[in-house]
Image (tube, rainbow, N blue to C red):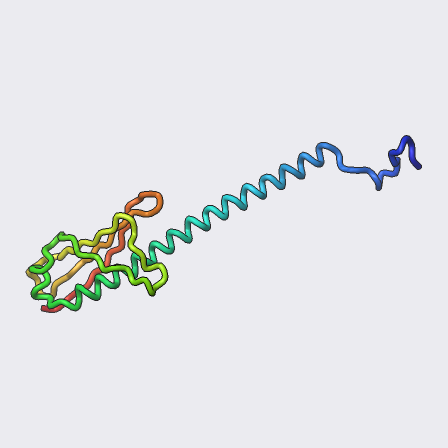
Length: 141
């Protein structure tokens, strides 16, 4: 039955204002959560890319250092000195120069045999935090 163009049948009624507000609130919370998740995933992806690039650069440095004679290494690169960085390989994805990157070399005991070498690779991430990867190797003289 109709009265004034409005159905009195409870099955045909529309949404109340409270139901609409609750539904919109739930949708807004879901949208906000998805935006936050997307931002977090982008941040993690950027961090993973910089870690891959740092690992490649550190590996290249390690190969270059271990190819030198261990007896001459402390003379060529004194303890705590800054190492020249390899140029990024444009054919390798994610092999890029990182912000404020530098590499340093340290020895446990420069005159010891075997020679324990540490190579520190440092850079700044997108939030300007200092990041560091270290590789240690033992070289016989």
